[in-house]
Amino acid sequence: MIPLLVNDAPVYDVVNEWAQRTSIPGVRFVTDRNTFRWWSRLLWFFLVFASLVIMVWQISTLILEYKNYEVKTDVLTVYPGSLEFPEVTVCNLNEYMTSAQAQYGIGEPKSYKEFQTVAQPLDDFVTFTSFNDVQFENVSSAWIQVMTSFGLCYQLRTAAKAYVPGLAGGLNFAINLDQANYQPWQAEVGAALFTTQPGTPINGQVPFVTINPGKSAFVSIKVNRFRRERQKPWSRCKGEAPSYTNARCVDECASAVVRNTCGCKFPHDPLGEPEMRFCTSEDWSELPCSSLVGTRHSDTYAYCECDVPPCSEDRYKATVHEFDFSDSFLNDTIERANNNSSAVDFTKNYASVRLNFDNIQYQELRESKAVTLAQLIGSVGGSMGLFLGISILSVVELVGDLMLLRLIPRFCGIRKLHGLGTKTVNSP
Image (cartoon, rainbow, N blue to C red):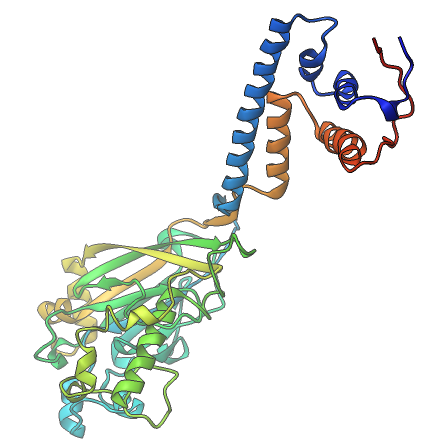
């Protein structure tokens, strides 16, 4: 037996000495010739190799899952005690009054002023309004005019809150549809009712419910609040409602195409020049504007880039429950009106609406990362510990001690093995 310094030891002995001292289970059993027979060491080799392959596959799967940047959605039901009321917009499906058109000689309005002239006035359309059972003496103090793709509509904005759900509170109003002034081509009768986050423009992309004449409607509403993940690359949203919504983006994009192609604008287009006239049926029947008629729902929208939702928005879902007016109510109402109207006239033109939350609660849908970096590190560490019984210190031991201090310097011609001291090896 000849004592040799570690600087003169063969590579095999250096690796074997490291394997006998490593904290990685199984490796010492593969290299220990003094304790285990060849077939036992071979068995341990296959066990360690199989565990290594499974561990690499598992870690690769975890990393690929992390690189997908998926999100998860947690749903939380919140009971706040009170809820902010949405903006309520009501539109008569009949845009123009025939009597006003005949009186002022306006066929299709080409400006906002002409729309105001031929549209149904507020005090004729909304005949009664109360909120939380407090009546407005003047409906014009509660409602404002707004231009929409349904024509001139009326919108209620209030800072008041709803404290009691159901029939006990909320908004209560009555409308007069005035069917005698409907256009001959207007096939449907009723009103479109929108419940939206304050500041949301009303257009054909926004969901609505219908109010039918001769009915007492209870509209129950629910609110969902979406809070989506904002951090890139997990984020699949942009902006915040109401400044950005899918419906607003698509409508503004299509409106821009119409302005540039036709030289006119939609009546509800807020981005067009104030002096630009409104498009009419004549524009849509002639080139170049007629080229958009068959493509407005396909080719035009392909350029809009409106395929992601806002990062934060409140959505209101409305459900209508309708009841018939009782005979006693109709008789009493007609008697008090004292205007020679009949029950038939009343049921053809009038409707009442009570709108409120079905419960003083909302659901918050909050997105977050499906796999965070901390979770990835924990899962990788768990796989390393499960399949090979190693930790981050074992990795440092493998890379730092074996590779950097032992093998790489030796392969580069540096005989001194740093940090190892001396070692006696058996030499025949």
